[in-house]
Image (cartoon, rainbow, N blue to C red; front, side, top):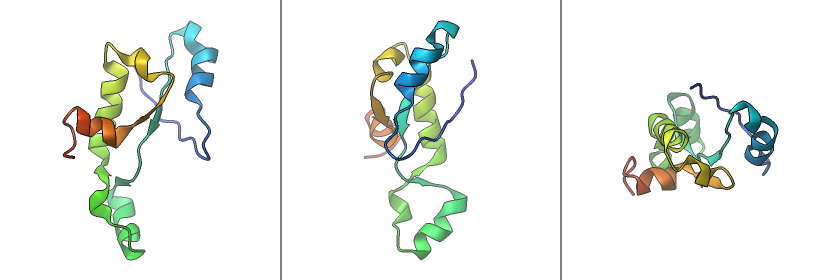
Length: 97
């Protein structure tokens, strides 16, 4: 099964629309709010403008959380809502609270 990331901004939630359009093809979609993800590329810039980068999750943690949503037997429960990746990561013990 392939996975793809489609960034959506300004409060637009594409998950339900994509689900309605492509469900008959076996394609599922989910809305995931990653919050701040500390990457090598943005850590320097974020710290220069005073953002506390230690509060950001590692991209590997966010990716593992999204994979867990997609691959779980309960994946359908995530289809109609926006999941907060870092909160979910903490609840499944992928991220320290």
